[in-house]
Amino acid sequence: MKEKFSRFGWEVVEYLRRMVTPFVLNLMFGITMFAVLAIGVDEAELVLNILLFALCCLAGFIYFRAAGEAAYKMKETGDLYREGKVPGEGGANGKYRPAKEYHWYKGLTIGLAVCLIPVILILVGAIADNRAALTVMVFVCGWAYSPVFSIYSMATGADTFAMWLMWYGFILLALYLVCCIVGYELGARKERRRQRSLEERSERIEQQKQARLEKQKALNLQREEQKRSRGGKGGR
Image (cartoon, rainbow, N blue to C red; front, side, top):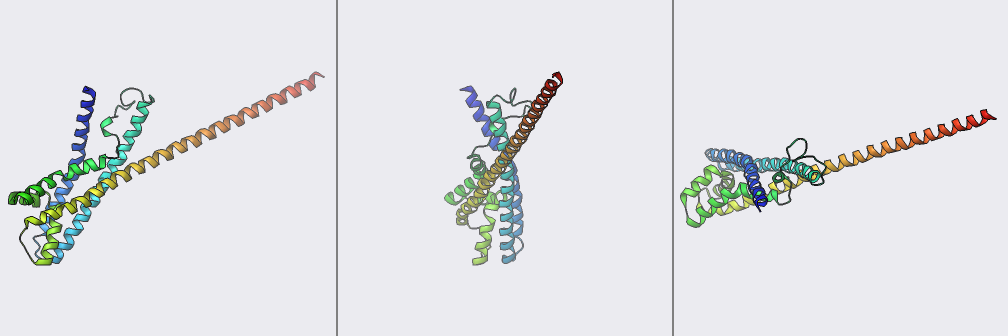
């Protein structure tokens, strides 16, 4: 029971550790989007905010793809450890951590952790009509609001942040979450293919080695037969 609780604790720590980098990246993108809103030209604000949101999703995709690769490498190490092929806790390098292993749901879980703060702000702001939540949303999680506001401002000419627009932030969160999930899974699949390629290469090398040994053994037997044959002729 204690071991399970400890593993769960390390899983939570891993989720929190993994969410820090994308959250900081999103924060910087959000601040940049807020700065863009000060340009005063609706068309430019719309184009730049959509471009920045696309870059935000791309950054999340790249980060989660790398995380998926690293997680699958850790899973391979874990498989070796469970098979008894890696001596000691985590093998010779001592870097094996079960909480860092790949699982299909981790891309979704970490992505949800990154989106948790904007989700809370949207719910508090939109349901409770809380202007403070909207203000924090614009500054801290602007990537999930500024693109929507740019579209609204372009369509209506409004220049005041609207509370009800926060609901549309869920669309942006969903798009970002899809990028996280896809990136994590593609990274894991890339590493899986690499591992299989290495295994196939090792098998081919081993087969070639065995073939050479068999060939050498056959040559040795042939030489022995020739020696015996020459020895028999000499005796006559």
